[in-house]
Length: 83
Image 1 (cartoon, rainbow, N blue to C red):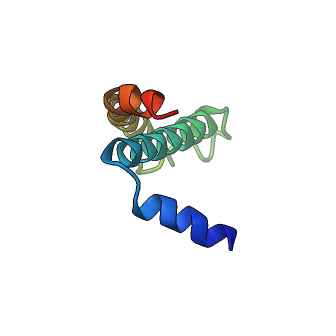
Image 2: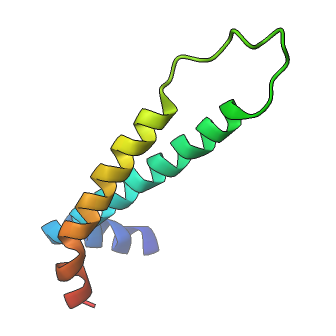
């Protein structure tokens, strides 16, 4: 029953609330990218030094953080006013 209430709230949420949830999702992806960049930057063996990876984690982090922060900033006045 609780899942249906959550789905109902999501279905009839305002545009600002949906924007805030999408912004939080982007910030979650930015946090994951930061974690993966830190993991890649740790000291490695000399044999594995050429294997740098193919995902630009820093660019993913910066892009998602800017987009997520902007989305949360735009939706903040409406979401705070509805509390």
